[in-house]
Image 1 (tube, rainbow, N blue to C red):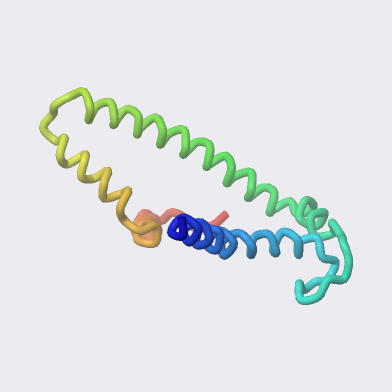
Image 2: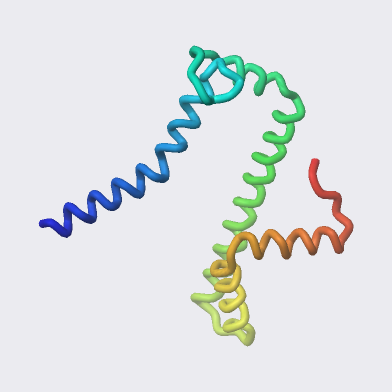
Length: 128
């Protein structure tokens, strides 16, 4: 009983630690003060400025387009690979399986740096 209460309290503390800063950020986004130190009233001025910024909206549209295409492509490739690994025996099966685990287990920063090096070597322009 006590262990269950401790576990519940611990999980509540973890969720509070994770979500309270997000809630504070959302509340302060409606603050009319330029800096979020003190509350000076409710406003939606910052959101109207955001919606009138054409370059930011275009960047968001490009990001969403790339996200949809990459998620669709990754799902298709992953599903086909999973079917192939489950159903068939082929010569490179351990290699393909190992490469999938390397991608899943490597930290995101390692993947980001290696992709940055690849893009720089290929001469692909960074940014928008």
